[in-house]
Image (cartoon, one colour):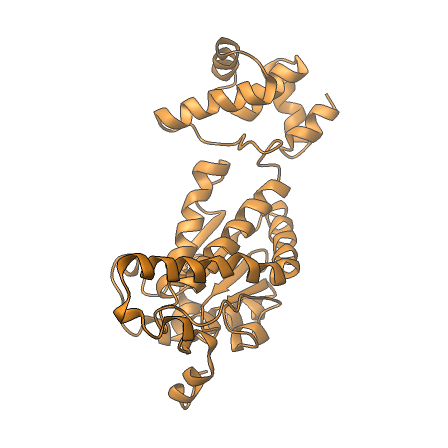
Length: 305
């Protein structure tokens, strides 16, 4: 799995090429530098249009995995790993899921979130060990993330997951990569050379974050974690989120603040249940029962109330 001539390989990667637009960046003013970076960043969203079919395919697989009791697991090294951990960590407060349902793994462990762990990405066996530590299984979906598309740590994990029969997804900025060839679904985001040559935390990192946001948010939406465009499973764990829960109930039902707060108290601060009670006129037990019967999809539950 280790490449015999890494220098030759790097010479072929889009993410390692020099960007003609930034050859003089060491002589630019502050404003010229940020204008240049902004101009390059604007290319990212356009590039992602080309991979939307693959992203949607992955979303369908992730949503199906959730319904079957499976998990979404991100794995990567460096910036890629950090972005996976970031997206995963936002899912519990936003969607009311457990910290186990969406999980991010980074080469080198938790310490690598703040400090580079030299050599961690070069060990394919480490990727396998890290999946075994979380009891990764065939019900789960693995998303391997690497701008280069060749990180041994991620390749090892993808190969192991495939061997278990799990759905595998690759997210890489170089087309036709080893990761793309190995995964069931290949999401390729060829955003081109970086402003700072080889610094894939920039455009490649932006593309990765945007795709990861799509994967988690769209999968959660299909799983009933939103009503209209409201995050009705938000966990009201601080003052801001408690206020947001009140606003969500008010926005969903067009009720006043007092009504929303009273419904939330009756619903044990569950915004979705409070909305169901107000719009259906049912009591807490009846509303909860219909929601459960509709697997938490509030829109469907209201149709059957």
